Image (tube, rainbow, N blue to C red; front, side, top):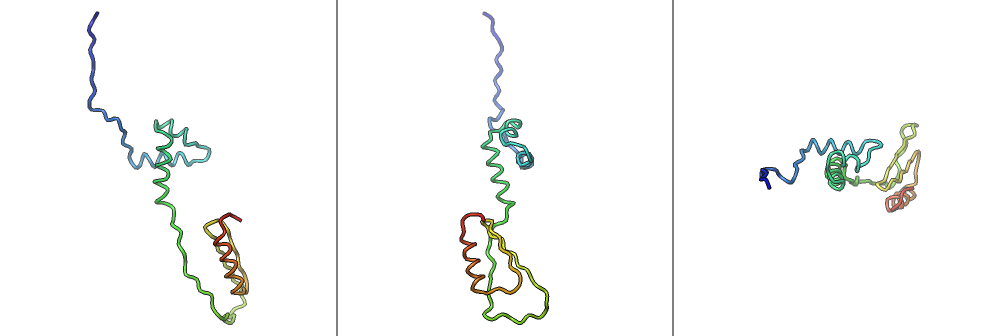
Length: 123
């Protein structure tokens, strides 16, 4: 029986440290058309769940937050000064879209906005 040398490695960390640039590069690769998270994660040597976490983390900061704008409907319509017809387009967070052109009855407009704003599904 012969003695063999044993090498003990003590300085290697078990955890890899990914820089923000590396995370952004992998997330961008996973968002490309035709790419799958599993394939990108496999090539990089990370678990797909980790890559999904990075996507949520990086995309959360880039998406605008929803906010409401103050809207007031005038009691009496003001006289039309020009003959140009205006157009208002409202897109709701649930995907509903409403276009208004010309003169509109304030009560009808208010009821329509309330229905579209409260609708949970896309129309």
